[in-house]
View 1 (cartoon, rainbow, N blue to C red):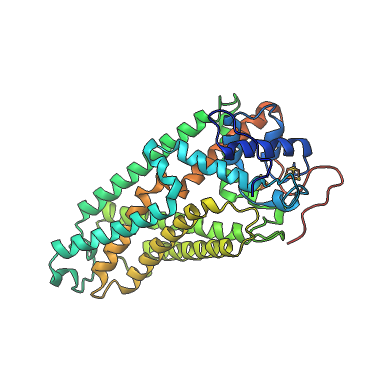
View 2: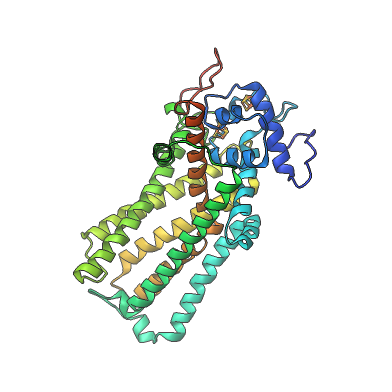
Length: 395
Ligand code: SF4
Ligand code: SF4
């Protein structure tokens, strides 16, 4: 909900940016939430709030929602302070403005439909092409033993398409992050290596969803570590799936052992554990969204979030179903469906929610650099800093 006294945007400024500036200026005067996350100390280091500052602060926010539930000026108060929602909208706008190639930015307005529609269309196209190009007696035959997958999709084709898709994703994300970095203003001159290490550590551990141990407000005003755990399960599962693919590539290229591999082989064990982690994490995060208090949530960005969760869940589930049924006649169709979903995931990385990970890492790095320049230590996280303020309730 925006304030009935919503500010008039300056020339060229969006209403969401004007609202975020209004709320942040109130927060800078209030300072009650200073200990919750690095956004508030970063806000205090600024005398004015230019567009670059809003972009930086929005991407530094982890949307833990603690400041909404702690805020004495949140709706129905007339100030209508809703910082998580305001920063979510500015953050979403930063994805749209800095994604490269730039025309992809338009897709963020209806991102959920675009990402899921593209995924469904790509899988359907692959299956139709297979029905047209592969004889039915080959497509629906039982294929077993080493090299079974490549009898349907030749290895050079599979590896070539995967390499191109991965290259596209890396290049597009790299250019997008470079655009965001420039938009956040001149980089502070401080030691890069320790700042980068600190940023990576905070990003990987999701420190700013930890609330100093109490967790975040994933559903209500009660603090909980559930969201952080589901996110770790999902991210850890993705890492294990990547490790499984890497080991399989080494097996194939170095040792001449083509897939598929036995159930107790390293690639299958890593992939199975990764797939289960991704499915559990994405299902858990989707359930949390479903049950969350809508107050601090920007409904406008929910489609983007859910599309990525659905895409990841389908990629993991299709991989596990393929593993279970790979010796049967459905293997060909399942293999093509799994490859299509994974390919769509890579191709839509620049215009999907996965972009939040490198963008947030860039903001954490800038924050670490700024704190080194200003002589501040590591950002505190967990409770309001104002003397005498009550700590967050126990989980
Ligand atoms: S209580 Fe927190 S969110 Fe509310 S105005 Fe103060 S600093 Fe901002
Ligand atoms: S307390 Fe949480 S929701 Fe509020 S600004 Fe910080 S990270 Fe964002």
